[in-house]
Amino acid sequence: MTMAVSTDVTLPKLVAPVFPELCIVCHALPDSSTKITKNSQHWLATFFTPILYLFGWSRTEIPICRGCKPRFYLQRWGRTTICWAIVIGVLSVAWPYFDDWGRLTKKIALAGLAILAIAPYIAFEVFWPRTFDTTAEGGKVTYEFASQAYALQFYLLNREHVTKSDIDFVRADGR
Image (cartoon, rainbow, N blue to C red; front, side, top):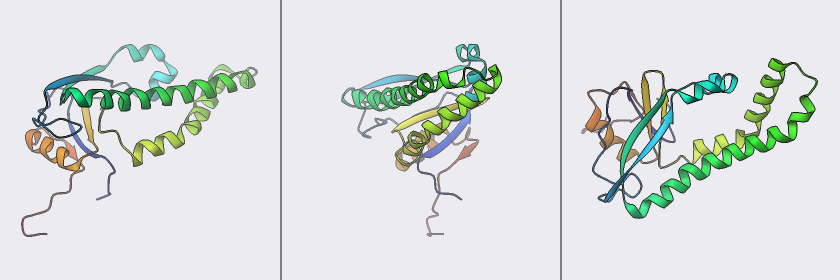
């Protein structure tokens, strides 16, 4: 099994996940909750057909402390804003250089350039994952946790619905 930097648990999209009664950030008893939304459309499909981005949203409510919300939102929206700023900046600078290209070729070239520009951002996201994130695709949602301990508790609460998990289990006898 490969080592994952985030610990992932995948559930069917129609299953309402059960979260441990712990704050997703600090793991203390939460005094609040928050809802996050994620689009389940494939990123490549939405790049070439942006209207698809209007459909396929999933919503998840997670337990969190009021004091942890600003950090959670800053991490969630700050990182997303940085990613979009990089993409928009690179595309706005590069766009004029592709004026003579065909429409489809231009889109493919600009998409490749944008992916190249955000490669360092993607590496940062992999090696320093967000406290919590989700990836919705098709009929499943993958819940991604920076804390393996929290992911294990989440897994145990949802194990009858789990379709895939990156959690390594150690038997009581150490094998």
